[in-house]
Image (tube, rainbow, N blue to C red; front, side, top):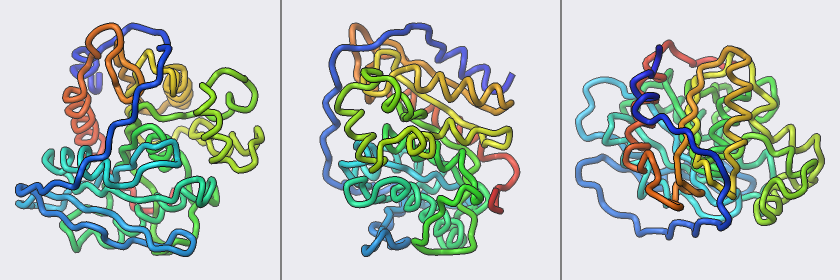
Length: 313
């Protein structure tokens, strides 16, 4: 069975929800990574009236075109920027043999949905069109997202050109399809914010309403990855703390169940004793963050070793 060893090593069984919200990880200054080739603040398109940019990380020694992983930061669709994934996730993936792109996208306060997703799709198009210039493989692109970024990574994976969410930020005529997606504690179904008061904590409900601009059931469905699940969905890895009060464990379960019913390739890793951002609660979070990072890299190596996804779905 595919990925059986990883499942056995990281198998988890606890459920529940925590009572407190984990504090956000503080922003860190951009360090140097002497073992990597880095290009910072590379323009990839336009978001409304401003230029959007990305940071590019890759191994110094490249023997063949490497798969790309787009890294999408957390922050409730409101806070933070690419600097957080440029300090943590992108360099880790580059050291694992990927070209990693940490990208900016517009916050919902500047452009509500589908604005942030349009920016992510624009970044994928630009990376695919320019892959040869930085030693990357345009036919093998994945997306890793944290929290709100996880939601956007899953939207990249589940939506197609026919869903009319491409935007006009740049690099037209190139596919924004990704071949694999990994979400760390990302929302998958926004409709409970409309129909189930109390399902999300008030701060999350407020952020979802801000993202939607017009908080209706139709708008929530349009912005939910689970809405777009089909048998053609690419491989997905969902990593979720079972005691997360910000994004309930049920969110990952909903999408995993929908993908399995559609015959999709999905792996759900439950992190015991973990709140949002995998913060430990009532015991050691298992698997640990280093183990989760290794599992994420292993997932992308497997999923991005398959056939190309160069054309729009």
